[in-house]
Length: 298
Ligand code: C2E
Ligand code: MG
Ligand code: MG
Image 1 (cartoon, helix red, strand yellow):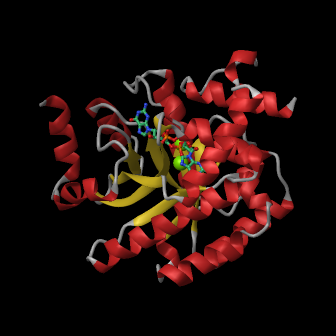
Image 2: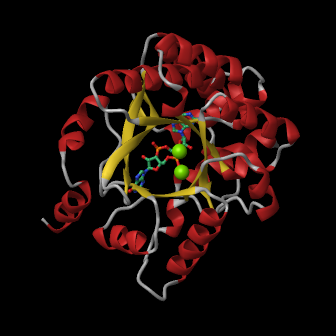
Image 3: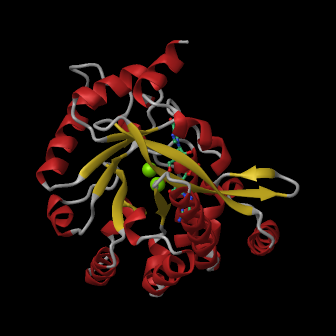
């Protein structure tokens, strides 16, 4: 039942989220195909076919690219690039999530150290599955990877999705507090979709909130989305949390968010996720806000 619920959930996310799906047999690959996919993912991880792509985050106050989010990509030898929306649930169900997280964490931290050495101190965010957090060795893993790559802890952020944070417990909060004590930053991802209680948010030792992209539609004044976002920003700032808006695709959205006091934005308007090398030219842009606004009118 739980597996099927997870398949339906994966499908709902694939359709853009903010929706629900009932499980249907055709949604999941049959047993044989699943097994095959699992073996291929295992091999793909060993052979380096799972790679981190990077999507920049633009700080609106300082008008600069200050961070990137690492997003896993699986280059399947036959099917081509497979979306994380498809293989993360598979990795979670089959226990491969630990290995996958480690792969992305290592790549992301090595890359961030390279940027730092080149004079571009970018913070890198890595998505963490709560399934992996519960396995209990995340703290050790993060410490080892930071040591191995010699990346300062403050340049690593871990993103945890709001809905996953809800169903746990003191222990999860304690792990997050330990990560923070190491100097690692913590963000609540997909905020607004998980119905978190405000009491819970108060306890959570996070640094920032990422507003889910389902709220970034029409942000003209008077719209419902704009009202929700304004409220989230006011609440987050009241709790000393930074606010990042995800899924920004238009200049109007960027300008509206800037006027509302949002700290940072991420989305196709600035750049799609891509290999590290593709970021190089964007890092040279002197006024990225103007550049992003121009690129959408051009
Ligand atoms: P997320 O962490 O919320 O990542 C944001 C997703 O929105 C990414 O999809 C990104 O490509 C997409 N996106 C960014 N800007 C825009 C935009 O302007 N418009 C639209 N329509 N979409 C935009 P992606 O790469 O497919 O990743 C989906 C989800 O998979 C992520 O959501 C994250 O929850 C999960 N994920 C990705 N990589 C990892 C990983 O290494 N580990 C774990 N545990 N989960 C991961
Ligand atoms: Mg994320
Ligand atoms: Mg998100």
